[in-house]
Length: 105
Image (cartoon, rainbow, N blue to C red):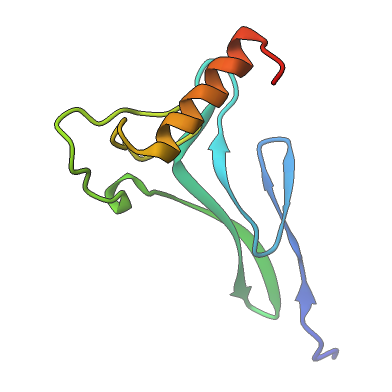
């Protein structure tokens, strides 16, 4: 009897393979697309005489920091709302608008 554990080092999520230890936002495909507030991870789980890789997903919206402004905004590709007066936020918005409008800068 072989005492060596069988080790599976990748996870399947939809049609995509992910390496053990990797994390990503859940992409549910059309019509939902990427769910930026759902973080998935490929984790190892012991199962009898082997180690298997499993996808574990969780909602991270509750982990978002509290905003200090009256009207926080949601940015494309981000989960947490942020205050529009932040310099970083303005730069991200500018980058997004340039991308959508096709500007080359």
